[in-house]
Amino acid sequence: MASNDNKPYLTPSEAAKLLMVSPITVRAWAQKGLLSSETTPGGHRRFLRENVEQFAKQTKTAPQRNDLRILVVDDDKQVTGYLVELLTGPDEPFIVSSAADGFEAGSKVYSFEPDVILLDLMMPKLDGFAVCRQIKADPDISDIRIIAMTGYPSPENEQRIIEAGAEICLSKPLNTKLLLELLKAGLS
View (cartoon, helix red, strand yellow):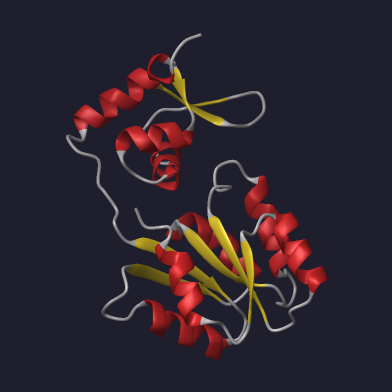
């Protein structure tokens, strides 16, 4: 059996590890045509190892991101404002953007390239459950961490959002200490 070091094709996560960036960055480079990729019959992106190694040499050192990119998605402007202020404090290593609803979140996922989404469950039109399912169904963005938030905590809501792909569902008002611990666990 061949070792991982000799595989001719790499997944986005494997290419990202080799380039020392996030898988989302690798996918963005591929979408922009900077890093060539192929798509499997199942719709998954794969990178030829030699192309990734050549790209690494051409760029000398791949840009490294030490800051965690967080997208706050909530239709409550007060909650969004509070979270943006909390997460952009002088001691916090986060880059933060926000979206007021599920539709705006859909476009921001590709333009902002978040590592984590703080996702409200109850929003008009496209709720957090639908947003989470759509993100987790897209192989290009499915590795984004989703931390759900709700002012309507219930075992049913928690189970539904976990089944949709969120890692946890936090009750509002948020336990900010727990939230910061969860976010900082994502920093390497």
